[in-house]
Amino acid sequence: MCPFYGISQMCNFDTDIGTEELAHLEMVSTIIHQLTKGLSMEEIEKSGLGPYYIDHTVGVWPQAAGGIPFNACEFQVKGDPVTDLHEDLAAEQKARSTYDNILRVVNNTPEVADPIRFLRAREVVHFQRFGEALRNVQESLDAKNFYAFSPGFDAPVICPPNAK
Image 1 (cartoon, one colour):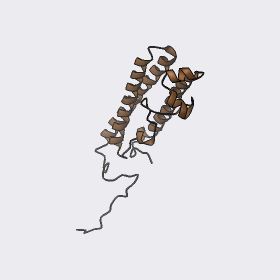
Image 2: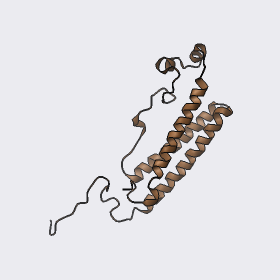
Image 3: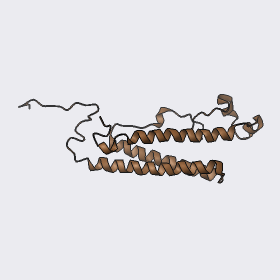
Image 4: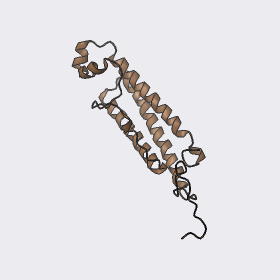
């Protein structure tokens, strides 16, 4: 069953974007690996990576810039398509603004800035796709029983005749 309540033009688009997001993680991880490869202990300590090195050597461990490790709490889902698509839209904007901040820090170093600009452009496209998906869902809100029950979870309630 389509996760978007039978709105066929939306089926599978979310997995396509999800697959591309994993590729984004791979690209950012590769940039970090290339920037830290071959650093001396003095360079590691001077750059502020000493505590990170103690835990992970120079392996890439996903975490926020503030040092908070990545975890499943980063994913938000309610099972309601309107709510979830708004969350997706917000996530794309957060990623775009993070890439904007990275671009401010790297001072136009082409080896870093060029792939980050590419990733930023893809976040804009994803935002547009989620916006189109939200419009499709909103146009279907008047469909019979759209919110009467969750077809992925609930069974419709059938009242017996003459029930009071």
